[in-house]
Length: 113
Figure 1 (spheres, rainbow, N blue to C red):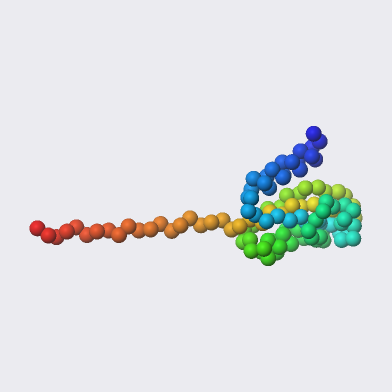
Figure 2 (figure 1 turned 180 degrees about the vertical axis):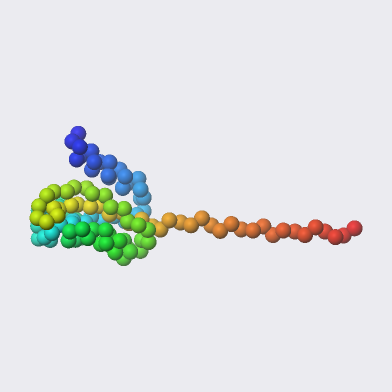
């Protein structure tokens, strides 16, 4: 198996194992949006060079996720200013806080004789 194919399989397994209820989408990052379809896998949104982190955070926030999104580079090709990169984004729910400990009501010793 080629190294690139192996990386894609590992990335997909990681995404599948991370959360079955999390929402995912694809970003194509590059210089020219009109060149995206020729260089990227099918994607949900296009962003200019080096803007994928901010866009992923904004999209996940719009979907109601409050955790930090996970970004996995699926494919990258050279071209123009920064190349074209396919990024799978996994919107994570915020980590759950453990419930606050409850205090047991202490009973006072009986003063009866």
